[in-house]
Amino acid sequence: SQCGMSVITGETGAGKSIAIDALGLCLGERCDSAMIRHGQERSDVRATFSVADNPQAKAWLDEHELCDEDAPSQCTLRRVLRSDGRSKAFINNCPVPAAQLRELGQYFIQINGQHSTQRLLKNDYQLSLLDTFCHNDGLLAQMHEAFQAWRAAKKALQTFQQQRESQAAQNQLLEYQVSELDEFAPQENEFESLEEQQSCLANSEQMTELAQSALNLLSDGASNIESMLYKAGQHCEELAQISQQYAGLQRYLDDALIQVQEASSELSSLSSTIEQDPQLLAEVEHRLAQYLQLAKKHQIKPQQLCAQHESLKATLAQLSDVSESEAKLQSAVEQAEQAMKQHAETLSAARREGAKALSDELNALLASLAMENARFAVELTAAPVTALGADEATFMLQANLGQGLQPLAKVASGGELSRIALALQA
Image 1 (cartoon, rainbow, N blue to C red):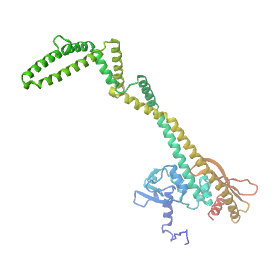
Image 2 (cartoon, rainbow, N blue to C red):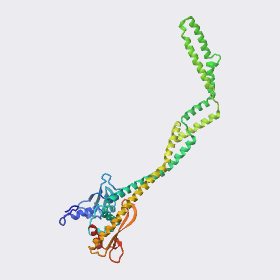
Image 3 (cartoon, rainbow, N blue to C red):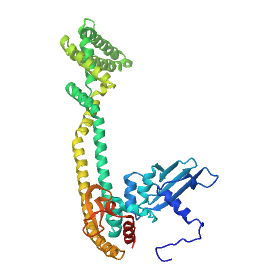
Image 4 (tube, rainbow, N blue to C red):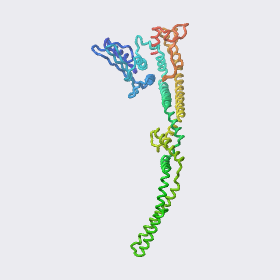
């Protein structure tokens, strides 16, 4: 053995092919119930690979949302066979079609056998071989990161737009509510003030009568409290002249007289402000009715209507910033897309340079493999941007003199394909 190489040897029947077949099952190859051990109902095979230094595999897993969140640097491929011929495939414990095992498996391992050269005809595998030759691991990692950043920014924008559309009806209702309250213009403590005003206007006649009756008793009537207190004070003053025991009573009566006079003065002042205005009463009651109606519509107390108005206006103001928020998200998408395209162009430049070097080396090797008149080239064409860049690679071959370069899949014979595969492995 040597560094980077392991050899498993054994006599015929030792189980070498079984190990290779089991690995092939994990890579999505066709299965046969005969592979199941005799007497058993099922067979469960799994293989775990590292993706830490495998940007192609990591990009594929991200694109298909099959990364193992608990062990992001690993990937487990699993195949379950049943005796009835059915099988199930899993990537990181997620059920998938067997075809996806084959797609992903090509980035992990190459099994060279009688028919293994057929994968050389696939463009994605050809691009992978070119990147391996160019040592593009670092550029691929940067490309993958830039693509993920662009996709995340685009998803954020799409989510925002979807939420905005779903909230359109709600926003329309909010605009109507704010407009209605703008027109009504509720004020802080206005409802309480209106209730007080309505009570006074509705009972103004009774209030006038009661106030006048109270004034008559206090000061205006023939026998009023003020005059009686004054007379009582005079009597107590005379009593005090006869006996000092009555001297303190005069002070109490004087204080009471002052209180009655102040009450009479304030009552007179207040009663003069009592209004009897049916039109104003109607306006106040209409305003109160509007308060009650709007409060019921918003399912709050009338006293809370002013605060509700301010709250709805604040919410609407936030929604008014939607266009600005969308513009920021759109700008983030454009910046991420520009960065992604720059990384894609850098990767494409490395591939173009590597394509020429690979073609030159392979042409030199093909001459030593009895293909003196053959000419090999790598054609790169633009493709939609993915986590692997913006290129599609096509291996081209001129098998004989006088023939133009054509895609390998169209012109290469089985023998030529095997020799090209050998040259690529060299």
